Length: 137
Image 1: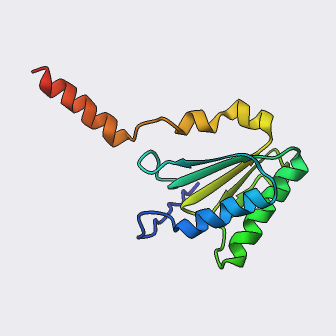
Image 2 (image 1 turned 180 degrees about the vertical axis):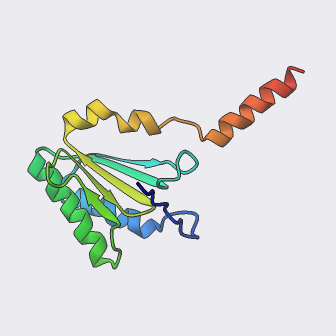
Image 3 (image 1 turned 135 degrees about the horizontal axis):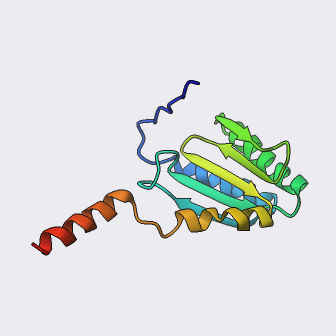
């Protein structure tokens, strides 16, 4: 099995307009409880994760489809879409931005917001640990 590595663009932050396009598409199609999480420094997977819910599996698929249509209309090609077949959790990979659209029960079960929000970047934790041990000496 071979593992593909992702090449990162040289821009340190995602283009604000991409995030705006995504959030406008989510708002337009009435996505529920939209949360934008800045995960820079916490993971190399993406800079921004957007989590939203839909009322039914059909609504979840429609929300993801609208996001894909909106970014394509802006000239941005998504890297992939996963989970559209089942419609319980659809992930849209826009490289620096990953959009998770889920049914509320699936969202509650996996708790992505609890996983990512409020966590300190690893570098900050390491600096704090070093500072504690050097001040104790």
